[in-house]
Image (tube, rainbow, N blue to C red; front, side, top):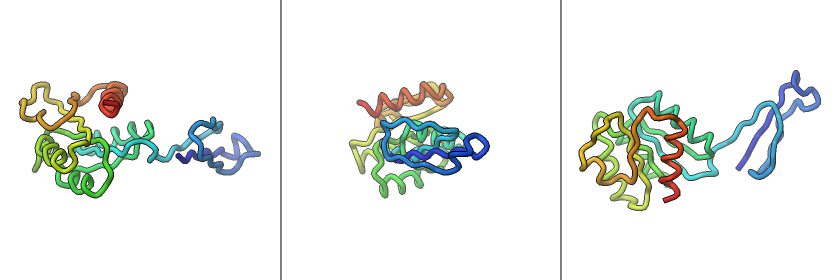
Length: 155
């Protein structure tokens, strides 16, 4: 993991530079702390709603995950095949290819991958859940979303 901290000259004139450490266990003090992703499981988020997709990406990156995003099922499958994805956060209702269709193809390609299906719909058809490992309702708190995903990754 690479952590970078930078202090502004106004805050700490003696530290007007960027410092880098390669240890996650060391404490870094400074005004600004930037974490680069890539030290947790790689997660693919697929959703046709860009705003929600970007929010989930930011939340997961703050948790230390490397996150790839796709705005459609087809784009998500392309990224899924080309990268070492360990988990997928997948929207159910998307144009072109619903989340259950995307999940079925992903499980066919990599049965071990963990899939969390998100939906604003409370009642989904049983067939829609056939290829997913866990289901969550869209719009829950960020903490609940992270907890759901971490439970899935630990299973």
